[in-house]
Length: 198
Image 1 (cartoon, one colour):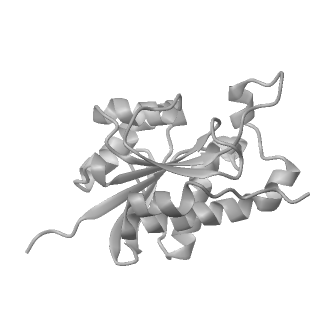
Image 2 (cartoon, rainbow, N blue to C red):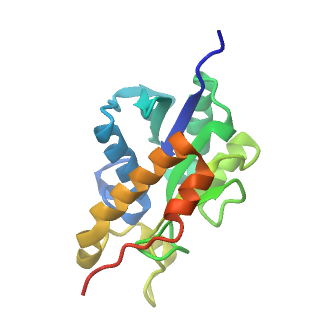
């Protein structure tokens, strides 16, 4: 009997309370909501990664949050994938994106790192970018603020009003990708935008 295919969903972020709820940690936020919604306990720790295994819509999944700093997360992701014998093509990486407007999420199949150092680390570790990404828009920094400071800062109060909606939409996008495929996810989510009401 063939072994059931396992999918790996990785949320990118930085460890520790200093970085909690920052723009760069939106991948962690999505993973936490998925884990809660599908009763997947993120309690296992191996290869400097917190992870849990469960099922989403009948799909066997491993949810993983690398605890190395984001720019060095690739080796941890590779070790977890190897441990469960998961190929990169069965992997989905959830991460922030400053080139995408706040309130937008976008699914992308394969490709380069788009300037994201966490994604670059994963590509380097696997020797290629043959995995799906769910990009969550955090917008560009205001004038005089560096990109690094922007992503390591917390969301503004008006952004927090709709942040839960964005995280929920991202969670639903992950479920769609896992259960119906990336193309279905693109059709449903790539043109949507959650707007801050005035």
